[in-house]
Image 1 (cartoon, one colour):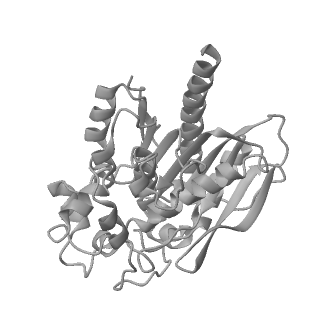
Image 2 (cartoon, helix red, strand yellow):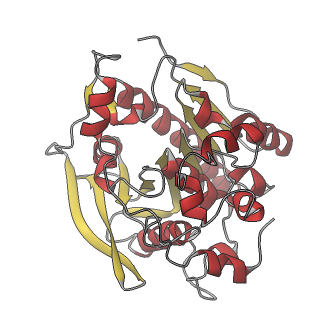
Length: 338
C-alpha cells in the first residue's frame, strides 16, 4: 500500500416551506441495509487481498453505551451509540458525531463502530448515529436528524465528560456529504426546524468529509447521481426527483453552495475514486479565499468505503485526530488570549 498523500493546511437556501415539503416520506426505494462491511469486503477482497474488516469489539479501555434514543421524528425513535474512554484524566473531552453512509437509503450506524472505538481510544467522545433514510423521509430530514444528535450530545456534556465547545461532525460517503452540509449550515434555522429560541446549539466546530460529494450540480456529478438507467437513482430517491425536476434542491443539498465566512474548518479524506471527489476542489478554493482552515488527505489506490477496513482505518483515524487536535487547539489558544 502506498503512503497517504497529504496536502498542507490551506491557510442559497430554499424557503423554509420547501425544505419542509422535501422532508415528506419518499415512496420508491425501500431500505435494504445491504451496505455493510461484510458485503463490501466480498466485492473488494480479490482486488485488495491484504485488507480485513476492522474490528467492532471494544477493548477494556473503551466504554460503550448503546441504543440511546436522541430524538423522535415521525413516530420513529432515532438512536445512537456513545463510545468514550473508560477512564479519563481530562476534565472535558472533545466530541464527534459520526454519520454512516449507504447512498442515503441503506447502511447502519454499526458500520462506524470500529472508527468510534479508535476515536475513543484517542480520548474522544464519539457518537455513531442512526438517521432517517430515504425510504422513511426525503431530504432534508437526515440533516435535521444529525443536528438533533449534535444538540443531544451537547445537552449531555456533563454526563459524558464532554466539553460542549468542541464538537465535530464526520461521515463517510453519503454520511460525509450529510456531515459537510450539517456543518456548513451552522445556525441556519431553515436547516434546523427543531431548534427553539435560546435552545442549545447544534453548531459544530469542525467538519470531516470522508469521500462524500461536495456538489450534486456539475455535469459530471449528474452523470453519476442522476443516471436515467436507475429507477430512481439514490440521489433522486432522496431528493424526491431528478435534477431536471428539482434543480434548486440538488443545489441546496450541495455543501459547496453554502461555504461562507463562518464555515468551520474542514478535513477532506478521499479515496482514489474520482466520482466521490466532485466539488471538493471548488470547495477548497472557496475555503482558501475566505481564509478558512482546510486539509485534504488522499489515500492512493483505495476503493470507496476504505474506512471500513484495516489498514486504511488506521490512516483515516490518524488524519482525523491530528486535524481535530490542531483545530481545537487553535480555538483553545484564541480563547486564552481573549
